[in-house]
Image (cartoon, rainbow, N blue to C red; front, side):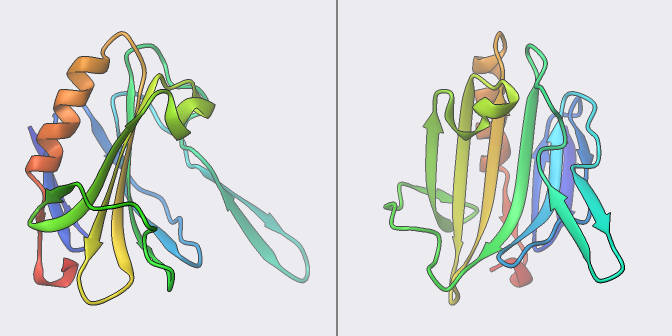
Length: 160
């Protein structure tokens, strides 16, 4: 197992996954890290003109290979909060909304299943989001690895 620590949280993940991060910040979201069993590229492109610089970011992979996983961790915030979905889990001692969709939002990169966890941070309209994009034939093993990762999540005082 490997360990990620940063942005107020820490967790364990399979040593076969590699952690990568790029500068990807928008008005209401900031990338914490990507984890993947496959090679990733910088998901952001910049357009520079005489009057502005614009960054556009997407996925760090165009197509998820067979048996691969892509996990994205972000820190999010909005006056509207994380949505109206009811809390159905606890992750790292904090209330969370855990969903599995087939194929879900990751379909655009060829995933067969998407697991999403929104972990509510107390005292503010802020939350962490973990999204796991998974492609067959290793869906069951990847779902178990994601569940183990979520069980290992811990928050520092800054992350709460």
